[in-house]
Picture: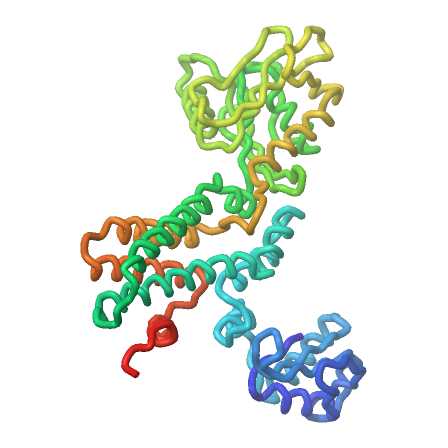
Length: 412
C-alpha cells in the first residue's frame, strides 16, 4: 500500500509506532488504534520531494491476504486517510513536477501493457526521451519568439539585419523536424492499440481452420459447406511482442444470398481498414488475392498443402489440418507485425492527442514562415509553442518574457 500527502508521516507513526529512517526498508509491526496487531510488514518512509508523487509518502509491503489488506486499510482510514482516486498518485507526480504529461501517460500504458513490445514502448516513453525532444523544440521556439518580439517592440536596439533571415532558416529546419516526426506511419499508436490482420479469400479455402490453428483454439465454426462464415470473427494474438487482432472474414464471392452478400461486404470493409491482409487460397486452385485494396499490405498463403500442389515463389504453403508450414507462417506474421510497429530513434507518437497537437504546431510554423507581418509571425510562433506545451502539459507565457530579458539587454 502507498500513502501520499502531508500527513503521511503522522499516519505511519500511528500505524507502526517507530518511523523508519528515510528510504530504508524496515520491518515493523502494524497495529490499529486499539493496539491489535494487523501484520508484520516491510515499511518505507519516503519524505518529499524525492518520492514518486513529490510529496511525503510511505509504502507498506504487506502479506496480501484479504484480512490483512482490509485491516490495514481500515486502520489508515481511522487515522484520517482516504482511498486514492484512479491515477491520483501519478496525477500528483505530474502536478508536483516529478514527470511531464507524456511520462504520466506512459505509466498508464505500462500498467495496461499486454505484450513485451508494448512494455518496451511504454518504458522508452517513461524514460523521458520524447518529452525531452519536445522541450528542446519548445526552447528553440521560445528563442525565435523572443527574437521576433524584440524585432517588433524594440526596433532601436540595433539588432543585426541578418537576425530575421537566420530566424526564418531555423523556422524551416524546425518545421521539417516536426514533419518527419509526424510521418511515422502511426507505428507507436499501432503498437499501443494493437494491429488488425484480416484473413480473406474465397469460400472453403480453410480460412477459419487457419485462424483456429493460429489461435490454438476453436474461434470459428469449420464446415465443408462454402459460406459458413457470415460475419467477421476476431481473436487476439501476440506476434513478436505485438498485440494482433486476427479477423476471420466471410468468403469472397458473388452471391444472391442477402445475408452472405452482407458478409462479403463486411469482409471487404474489414480488409480495407486492416493493417495487413492475409489472403488465403487453395493451393490446388492457383494464386488468390484480396483485390481492390492495394493500399493495404498483403501476405498470400496457400492452404491445404497436404492435398498436393505447389505454391509459387514467395507464397507460404501451409496446411491448417496437419500443421505443416504454420511455424513459418507465425514467424512471417511476427516479422510483418514488427515491421509495422518498429521505430528507430526517439519513441514514436502513441496517442491521437499528441498527433493533433503536433500537427497544429506544424501548421502554425508554416503560417509563421508565410506571414507577411512580424506581428502575425509572432502570433503563429506563440500558438505553435502553446500547441507543443499541450503535449507535455507545460504551457506558460512567463517563459517567453524570461527568454526575452535573458537574451537582450533591453531597458538598462
